[in-house]
Image 1 (cartoon, one colour):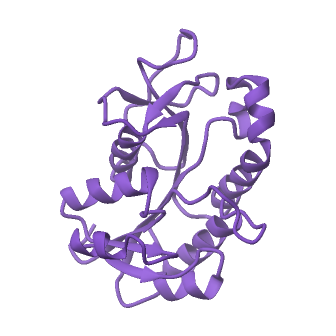
Image 2 (tube, rainbow, N blue to C red):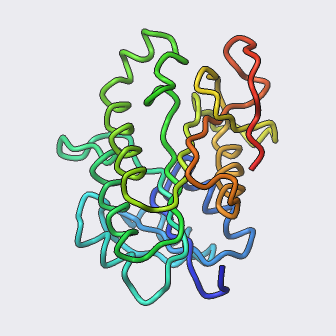
Image 3 (spheres, helix red, strand yellow):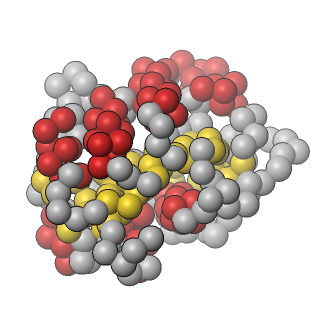
Length: 224
């Protein structure tokens, strides 16, 4: 990675994305963040992050932000959550980011998804699966779009998210039977590890805290 290339971050205003922004700036990375509202703009700029205003659901906004003057080395997306005007960003927003990343010649795309998508559906209790189904369907569509895009990717599926400080016990695994909870700050640490890891290329990984697992299945940790 050259000194002049940026990490493009979507979802930096809150949650895991905000934690990733903190960590990347601590590592002196050049970061460009896509923001839908100006609520956290000043805070991010104070951290040295270049902010592009725009909505991930708007193709033109995304392309303008990603195809600007700054070369984008990698894209990290943590977007999702509450629907805007009946449309969830989990699929459509990520689809726009993925398509723009292809146009921009981005080297790697890291998508933060969720345990419960794809082959991890059976890892969570049936009641939780049913409750989360609408959003998991959208997240799974985004995962598939990324896999089929031709981009080098890493998909990270965290378990239940907590906001407490990092424990340092976050782990990744390719074992789709594993579930549990994890702190957002630990997910951010794992995401940043995968950014420069060739071993993590084109992998779909679950992320949990080794001390907050559901049950005690035997499984193999993934070392990025």
